[in-house]
Length: 144
Image (cartoon, rainbow, N blue to C red; front, side, top):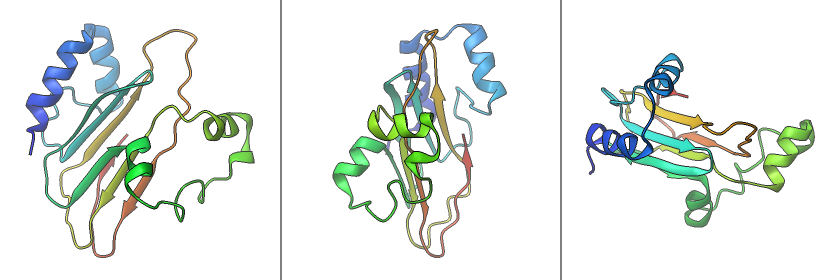
């Protein structure tokens, strides 16, 4: 399993985040050093820059990968109706990212999973959909 701290640090270097951007992330609860995190997902504009786990019993994937890997028809657009508003409708029609987090049955994911949907460019939108599943008897904590 990839070490979350090392992997996130490497990706953050590749992104060349400014000190101001790092401060903005920290204000949202995202620790760029990923200390004490069970997993980390980082979407910068439309690019998944980070998707790693550091604990057994946890699954963390980009939403497009999860939709290919799993039968999610019981979850995908079931909690929120796309017709709710124009923004939600656009997300359904133009899926450009998002995450899938699942704690497997009985898994106790005690450290939080951090998920960041970071917009770096001006006048930019992210049309995303996220699915979070805590299976029976599991425990899951998320910072997003």
